[in-house]
Amino acid sequence: MRDESMEFSVALAASVHATASNDLVRPDGQEDLAFGIWFPSHGLARDSGLLQTIILPQEDDREVHGNASFSGQYFVRAACEAAAVGGGLAFMHSHPCPGWQDMSIPDRRAEEKHAGPTLAITGKPLLGLTLGTDGTWSARFWPRVRSKTYQPAWCSTVRIIGKGLRISYHPRLVPRYRHQQQLVRTVSFWGRAAQEHLGRMRVGIAGLGSVGSLVNECLARMGVRTIVQIDFDRVKVHNLDRITGATARDAATHAFKVNVAARNAREAATASQFLAIPRTLSVVEVEGYRAALDCDVIFSCVDRPWARRVLNHIAYSHLIPVVDGGILVRNPGGKFRNAYWSARIAGPERSCLECAGSYDPGLVSAERDGYLEDPSYISELPDDSPLRRNENVFPLSMSLAAHEVLQFVALTTGLVGMYDTGEQRFSYFPGYLESHPVSCETNCPFPSLTALGEKADQSVGPFTGRHAAADAERASDQKTRSQSRKTP
Image (cartoon, rainbow, N blue to C red; front, top):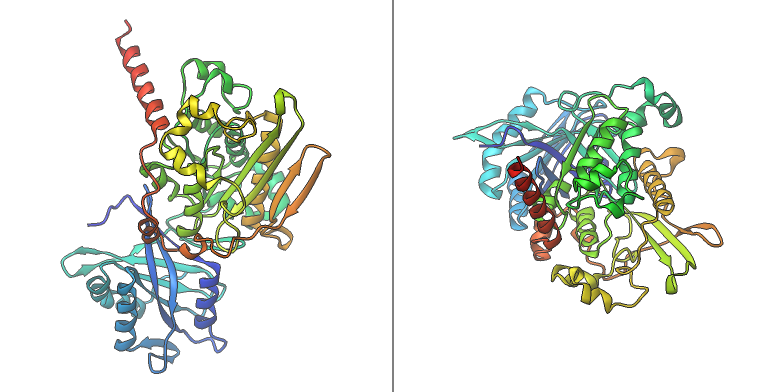
């Protein structure tokens, strides 16, 4: 039996969308069809099917006659190909009209008829997709609800990820965006269509420190309706010079950063029906990782290599673009020399965070083994090691947060036809900005994992696990709560 509270979605790379569109949208206006292979991606609140491969029809595989029909041999061949690689079977067909498409009676009969055989061959439910003439997809899974009975579970969204991010929304499952009076200036900048697209997304932020807290408030003020905040850490006194919305009381009570961020976002929100979803987790933990998979876009505002490695993996294998940035301060002997900061996006058709130098892969295992929580290990590192520098200076964080948000705006709106600004690098002295071309190394493994979802998670081995620092913060919170209950 399926979980009635679970949301469903589909994602595909722009290259896969182009292949499917070229085959399904016919110049003669007739319907057409094809099969494909999808892989699962399981979040905490959303399950996604990642359409990874199109299995184009061969001669005599299908017949086009206004509508379209397929042969039994085509279905069996496609289902067996999907089963051979551990994937599920997707059935795609086109309708000769634009927008989100419902199913006709023949559509429903064809998909329902093949739901049982698909589950028997692949072990996964049939994924049905319909493509409109304007490139809008609709989608549904066909789970078994009881013996020999299958019903469609409609997807809330279908996401196309490439240089840009395009999302089709189910008109009944995802409420229309209401333009508030507070957003008049914002809407006048990029238009109502872009605002509706931005506002209906579910945007995640991993790390709610100096940069993440600024991004959080900015997204809330520009009308994003749902923000997922992921961070295990709590507010300390030395955080108060750089965490937006944090107060002395938050530091005194050791409030979790995500709870402060959620409160601040609710107060700043300009979207109606605004929802903040705080998660006191690390993205390197299994539950934190799954919370990230609920998002359409993720801001990487973390400062450790393990978390960046995990987010880099998510960007490709789970088709969730990651907006990343970092700050580097040259401060030899305690005397400021210069500061640099950079912003970029990882995902299909873009360079990965590892090849861009966003993190040192050699330090990932060191962090997993607990060395980065060992003061003696840190003290032996060179003075210019990123793990020893105090770089979260608020003015630098403000600049980085602003440019990460602008990267997000380009990705999602394509203003003036620009979806990809490239990696942007800044230097405090002599005060310049440059767009820095970065490409993945020829042997980079991440692009090859695109849209493989949980299969990619299994193939690269375990990269999530227990996070000692996160465990310690939560244990400390439980101890504080227990003591407060005992106080008369």
